[in-house]
Image (cartoon, rainbow, N blue to C red):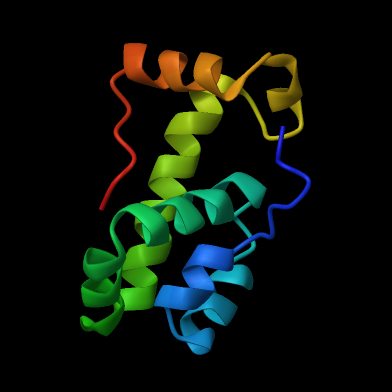
Length: 105
């Protein structure tokens, strides 16, 4: 469940170029969870995210990493629509930890 004051990509918009965010948002395979992962990475690893963006094919490489993480998390937690069945973010975090999923670049 998201916080009522949460705006998608708030953190990412502070770190990445608008062009990069636009490209990622147009990726048909990235869902709401993938974009939430992007925002998490912008908050937790802003410098690494900027480095990846600046690298050759950076936005494509970033999309691949987001899709990989999104797929891992979807397999464990279910689709974003099903995520509401988990009572808390802590429960989701514990499931990811038990399955050794590390959200990072």
